[in-house]
Image (cartoon, rainbow, N blue to C red; front, side):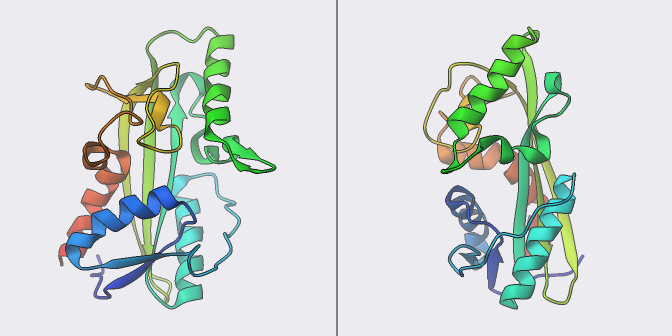
Length: 202
């Protein structure tokens, strides 16, 4: 595993919520994060059908464009009754002509479950794959997952994406209701980051 010696990295994302979470996670290691959005980079087309494949596309694109190591996060919600959908297409389910609307996307998921009379509890998992890529083409992959159930109506405004309908196993609050620090400590991103941490500590 290659050590990260640089103290500045690019987050290969235009998502403000992800930037906030990732910046908080790497801050203890003295690493600062600038987003691809802040640098004015376009978003590359995600053409793979796996989280790791799309994470690699984004990280390598940002690393080449910036000349700095780049960290990408490809994550999504996989619903068991929907055969893993929306999965890698999670963000696509929220697309509208005016940007992403996750309230609409959450309703779309719930309506599909209702229409098929999916049994309760409606199990799902948040998946996260981090890719740290260097300008020379090297990369490292770190994967995380948290299991839970879906519920309706939406609850909480602390998170983003599908957080308001997802309750982790063993918890009573959705990710949308949960204290942000508690969510950061147990999220799919935190699980993946705990693996990345070993690299940062080298």
